[in-house]
Structure formats: structure tokens, C-alpha cells
Length: 460
Image (spheres, rainbow, N blue to C red):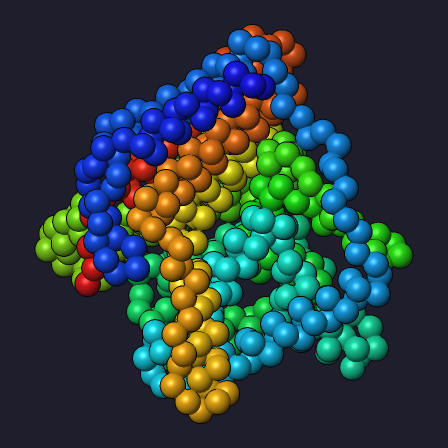
């Protein structure tokens, strides 16, 4: 593996220490990207391709391997942490709704918008990537459902969750909330609209839980599915024993991506995670603004044009993945195609995670500091103190981290896909042939991702 490390580190060194071109924006200020775009795109694409070639030539088989025990939390400590997390997060959600409905109606100055869209939606996603999903503990709807079940004396459920629904409710919820509400509407900047959304989603979740039982929260709540999928890429795995202890283990970052998706709805959700973060970045580029403006004039649909573009783009991503799977299976039987779609879909997760981290981590840190400041101001009835968690984030560090995250994410995806191909096909030659279309897709998406972050940011 040392040759792979040397090749990767050498390419990244070139990428991170090269010239200057192309403007971008972070924290409201424009700056120059510290690398030529041609070298950036070519170097990143070559890094991903070289990784795939090296894996094929060396016949290296990535495996999940045995996790390494880091520590064990006692049953008493794990119960205390669980209770604190559940009660604390529920209290924050209640306060966010209250602030949203009755607080100052200015998005950046109201804890409701800062907490709901950045600390909660994006922040918990980052936590899931680092240590696995904490959502079974934090979910406010599960907390309400547990309370209602205790009042009833048993778990509530009026009907069995229909198997045919699979995780499709979560897919629809994710596309609506993260794809459309967050990116294409003013809801994230409107405290009352944010609070209303949280209340409405809570009502849907709790009523669904009462009707379908605990399975509803596992399959219909897009937060649960999103954080669980992101947790697959986590280098840390937490597991609770029958005695209540929590084992914390380290593992290889591709280990959780070697197991197939449970059904096609999960595969579609994975594609959606890659697509939505790309679309989010693309909406801020001059190219998107020109396309949107042109279509508005041609179709006379107003703001609905952006939703049309979002839906068309998602269908395009689904079609691209379907085409790659067809190429992998060489247009085999339907069962073959379905099986390949399920086993290779999780290998795309490291790409979604890497781009999500690169895209949002500075803003999560910024808004976490802002949320703490606003909360302290609300408690003390005084002015909000200045709390910044990004003073250390210089422009070279920001750009270097973005390139590093995206390239490493694609490399991990290539390693995972190679491991799946080796498992699935009888000979290394067949595995290499099956791997080629997916590698081509990953190389192309690497360069697309970096092109998006290299474009000037357009606001308004």
C-alpha cells in the first residue's frame, strides 16, 4: 500500500502548492484559488484513475478487516450520555421552534434558522461522518413517540409498515427538504417558516410512528436514513452490547461501503445525496444563473424553472448511474442489473460525504459559533457576544482542505468499488472490467466537483 500512498501524496502536494486562478467565496469575501484549474482537474482525475489502476495491477483486495477497539463506555455512562443527548437535543428543538415563531424575524439573528439548517441538518451530518449516526438518540420524534408509548403502556402501532414503501418516503422527503426547500426557497432564511416546517415535519413523523410503529422512523424519516448512510463512511463504529456498554472501534473508511444497499430506494437515496450537494453548489455559479434566467424568459414559469432544473438534474444523475450499472453488467438479466445497482451504490457514499464536508464545514463552524452567541444573548438579555470558530481557517487551508477532501473521498470510493467488484466476480479480470465504467464515472465527477467549487459565487 506504500506505493499508493506515495502516489496520492505526491499528486496532492502538486495540487495544493500550485499557482493562482479562479475566484470563489467563503464567509462573504471573495478570494483567488491557489492553483491552476487545469492542474487541479487533471491532477485530481489522475489521482483517482491511478488508484484504480494500481488496485487492478496489484490485485489488492480491500476488505473490511477487523475493527480495532479504541475504548468501551460503561453501561452507566452510556445511559447518562444517551439521556443527556436525547433530552438536550429535544429541548433545543423546542426552543428553536419558540424562537422561530416569536423571536426576531431576521434569519442570521434568530437561533431557529441558525440551529435548524446548520447546527442540526448539516452539523449532525458531519458528526455522523466522524463517529457514526447519533440519530436514534437525538431524534425528537422518537422521543415524543417513546413518551406516548409509555403513556399507552406499550409500543404504539396500528398497522404494519408496507414493505412496498421501502425507504421511498425518506427519498421524497430528502429531495423536497434538502433539494428544494433548502436550496430554492427562502425558508432557511425565514425564522417563522423554519419553525412551521419543523412543526409540520414533527406532526408527520409522530403520526406516522403512531400508525406504523418504530419502523416508520427507520424508513420514512430522511434524517435517519441520511445520517445512517453517512455513518457508513465513518472511521469509527459504535455498538451497544446487551449489557448496555458501548464499544467504540476504529475501522477502514471503506469498510461500511462494502455491503449492498438494502433496496432500490436506498440506492436512489445515495444518488440523491451526491446530486443535491452538487446542485447546491451549482446554483451559486454564473452558469446556473444564466441558464435559469434564460429558461425563465423562454418558458415563462418564474421561480418554478429552478425546481424543473432540479428535477431534471436528479433524473439525469439517476440515468447516468443506471447506464453505468448496465455497462457493468453488460446488459445482463434484470436480476443481474438490480443486484449490481444495490452492491455498487454504497461505494458512491464517500464521494457524497467528501463533497458535503468540503462544501459546508466552514459554514457549520461559523453558524455553531453564531448559535451559541445568540443563545447566550437570549439567556442574558444582552448583546450577542462575538464567537468565531473559523479564525484559524486561512484561505490556503480552506482551499487545500476542499481539494484534499474531494480527492480522498473519490479515492476511498474507488477502493470500495474495487473491493465490491472483487467480491462479486469470479476472476480479477472480470472484476477489473466491471470496475472500469464506475471508475470513469468517478473520475468525471471528481473534475465536475472541483469545477463547481472553483467557480465564482453569484448571490442574489
